[in-house]
Image (cartoon, rainbow, N blue to C red; front, side):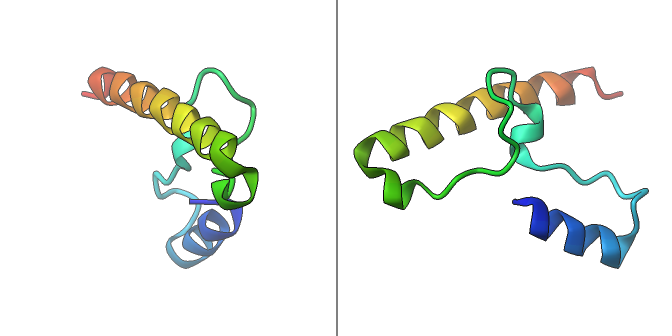
Length: 67
């Protein structure tokens, strides 16, 4: 989900809804929108994969802390 998707969902469902972008859970990047890897060649796909794996681990940690 990118910032535009997030804004549209918050407008529809309100700010109180617990919505997050996947990269909000990433610990090793300041980027919050998953970039399109298509234009970055093979390295672009590797970068996006690394970002998504990092965020996935962060998401799992966050879910484990949630009661």
